[in-house]
Amino acid sequence: MSHHRTRFLSLGAAAAATAMLAACSSSGGPSASPSSSSSAAATKTPITIGASVSLTGDFSADGQAFKRGYQLWAADVNRAGGLLGHPVKLVFLDDKSDPTQGSTNVQQLISSDHVNLVFGPFSSLITGPTASVAARYGYAMIEGAGGAPAVW
Image (cartoon, rainbow, N blue to C red; front, top):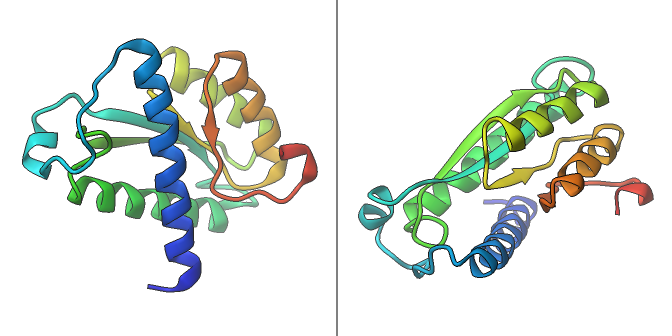
């Protein structure tokens, strides 16, 4: 596994675990150890993570790479017993490389699909508006990559 890929997975896993620990501790949620067996994780309610990614449009090559990266992370986490002992389930929506569609998708993921966590899209053009929607709902949005100062 390349150094970049390992670093991406490690950072993503650490960020997601931190966000979930904060969310669960503040809501009295589950407190299972991340080292629980994968069979125990399979019997628990999944932690659903939503992501609006560019599966079509100008950023589709990068959006599809993000999707594969998020799927790889989830597979690794689930193989290791899940996140906080719960299996990870991913939900993807296509933002079509459009900031407005990305914002609509994040709103749907949170308010209609009731995801527990949101992963960010590719492109600072889309990340800024989608992060604003996530913040409005009180959600942290874990971003896989970003370059524009406005994103941070």
